Length: 184
Length: 312
Image 1 (cartoon, rainbow over the protein chains, first blue to last red):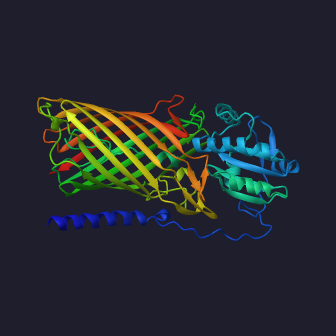
Image 2: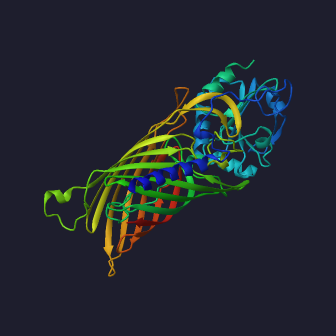
Image 3: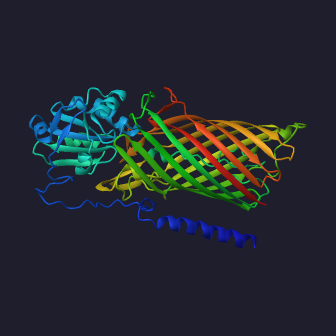
């Protein structure tokens, strides 16, 4: 009888986990390493790699208007980093500042703040987090967040022709560096 | 917010004496099973950066996570027990320019414990050397990524309720009660299993292999039990914890932007009925928002309300 109860308990565990697996968001139980990036049409505009970046006009935390076209006209490329002023974001931005900025003087690095909701609050967060030297775009209406399918840590590299050459989560910086080194 | 899910404190439960000073779901000796339900209210209060400096959240932020933890422990044999804990997580984040509310299942923990003792080790007086013998538990915990991780089909980071990795922890818990005092030491070391990633926050990316760093948790606690006239007890426990996780690897290379440390203190009051069949607990887990108390991690306060029912 005792072993029968244990067996029933084990079955219960399996059922519990099975129920968890019924959700469509539990791919983690059996991760896939297959490349499922969708094919893109050459010359199309969108947020994916090898698409033309959507043009944008944004206000930075000092109140100045910035456009993608103007930034690209002055640089070999533009890097957008999406921040919510969290520890992960701070670690990434610190890494960008210490490991990438000096090595790519002809690339413009722009921090996109999509959470503070105003130019004033964005500036306050920028200074509070110690990033006065960066240019921070106050994405008040989430235009950039939506246009580039952003999230915490999303890093977008746009070359001088306006094509997106990288759009993914910032990790150890290796892939961003390789992408920047490959800029024309 | 995903990172925050990693540290969901377990419901404090009765251990060998039913006093509630342990830091894991541990079934008391001579008990058949136990059901444990707890609710965590976690409030964020800035974070520590990689240099260990405390940084405030953006002005106007109100960041919270709530977790309902349902646990069940079951005795397999006189020295063996197992348990499972499933959390359900609500994220409630409000910034000046953004409000989000999401919820979902968290990561599930499955535990197997071996008790290296046969009788109750709690004593009133030390009369012989063997009375000093502590209750020693040795356990293994498998964390199953049933939560919503950055690698699932999600819209953005606000949906995250889990880390997305399997983890195996080895744990040693030593506990000694000489009424009315008690003390415990918990050491836990965990290794994640490397996994493939082909999607981040809903976007398919070039596949790569990722592994999180090894994880170490050390908790020491001391408790004091008050016996009421009814022989019900109230046990007050103060616990100090140090948690750290090494840097992750991406395709085998160290990701220097990852890893963290966190130090915290927890105060628990546990009320147990005379027969120790019901234990009601409230825990306040506090992390000091001061420089040097953590690295690369959110600073949070967690209030936990819980109840355990022991089946004899």
